[in-house]
Image (tube, rainbow, N blue to C red):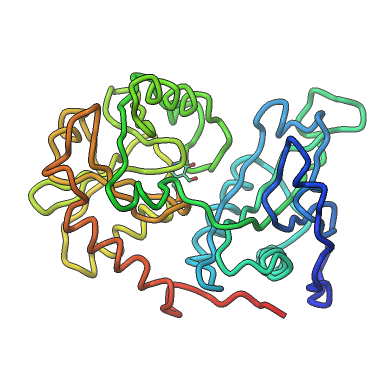
Length: 319
Ligand code: PLP
C-alpha cells in the first residue's frame, strides 16, 4: 500500500509550456502511479479501458475557502462505486483522504475541484477479460469551476429540455458515478441549437431526469420535487434535502413531468460544480417572474454558510 507522506507537500515546478500547448491544462496537481505531478504530466495509456470503454468510476468533491465540503459523503459514494464495478485500489479510505489533501495542498488552491477516479486499467496482453486488467487509481485538484458562470448565477440559467433519454438504470446503476455522457452531450447540442445554455434530458418514462453534471429541482407552492429515477444521487441534491429539513420546507424525490417543470414557481439545478444554481428560462419561457426565486436564494445562501461549519466541512491540511 502506498502511503503518501506529508513531506511531499512542497511546491511543484511551474509548467510554463502549458501556456503554449493547444491542449492547455488548468493549473493543478495530480496523483497517479504513486507520484504527485503537475496536471500537464498526468497521462494514461490509450489502451486503458477507462478511455476505450468508459470503464471507470469517479467522484468530485470541492474545496471552498480551504475546506473540503462533505468529503465523507463523496468517499462513501466513490468506494461504493468501486465495489459495484469490482475494482480494487491499493489505498484505503484514509490513504485516499490523505492523497486528496496532498493534491490540494500541493496545488495551493483555496477553491478547488478535486476528483478521485479509478479506471479498469489495461492488461499487458491486451486481454479482453476485464479481470486481467490492473485497476488504476488517480486523483487531482484543479481550480474550482461552476456549471453556471457569474452572470448566469445572477440572472438564472436558460435551459432547454432535450428529447434525449438518460441511460436507463437497468443498464447502468446511476449511483455509480460514471463517464457515460453521450446522452448528456447530445442533449447539450440540442440545447445550443435552441439558443439555450444547458440541457435537461429525460428518463425512460418521458419525465425530466438530469443534465450534464447536475440534478434538478422544481418548486411549487413552497415544496421541492426532484426526479427520483435514473439520476445520480448527487451530494448537492442530498444537501438540499438536508437544508430543506432544517428550514421546514417539504421536499420529495418523485417523477417530474416536463409540464410540471415548465410551469414551476422556481427551478434550480445542483452540482458540486456550482452548488445551487437558479434556472429562470425553460424552453424559451420564463419560470415564475423570470428572476431567481426566493426559496432558491435562501437555500443557496444557507448552502454556502454551511461551508464554514465544521459539521459539514473539514480544513485542508496545507503545509
Ligand atoms: N448528475 C450527474 C450526471 C453528474 O455528473 C453530477 C455531478 O457531476 C451530478 C448529477 C451532481 O452530483 P453532485 O451534487 O454530487 O456533484
